[in-house]
Image (cartoon, rainbow, N blue to C red; front, top):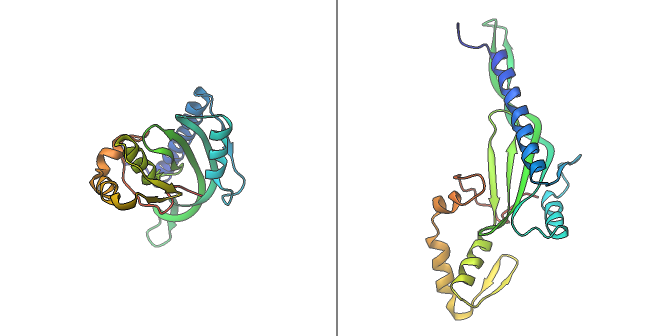
Length: 191
C-alpha cells in the first residue's frame, strides 16, 4: 500500500476537523455551557463571553464556546498541469474558528482560539496583569489598578520584579489546555 494521495490527506484533515468540532461542542454541552455561532466575525466575542460570565456568575471554569468564520491558513488540493499530479498547497481561505472562554483561578478571564481546519493552530490569550495583580494580592502589596495600569507608589519595584521573574513555561503549564506558547497581546484577548 502506497502513500495516501493529496485528496486522501484532504479528506482525512476534514474528518479530523469535524471530530475537533464535535469534541469541543460535546465538552461544552457536558459542562452545561453555551455554544453559539456568530454570523459576523466583527462581533465582540470577548464582550459576549464576559456578559455570559457576569450574568451566570461564573467564577471558575468554561464560560462558553463561540464560533465564527474567519480567514485562515490551510491546505487544498491543486491540480498541477505540468506534472499531471494533485498537490497539497497552502492557501488563505475562510474556515470556522472556535473560541473557548474560561475563568481561571490564577489567570482570570482567558480564551483559546482554535482553527478547525488543518493544521489546527491554537492561540491562547490571557492578560498577564491579572496574574500579576493576584500575585501582588497574595504578597499583601498595596496598589491601585485601572484597566491594565498599576500604581504602587514608591514600591513599584516588588511588582515589577514579580512580573520579570515570571516563568512563561511554568505559567503555560497552568492553562486549561496544558503547555503552550506565549503570544504577547496588548489587551490579552481577542475582540
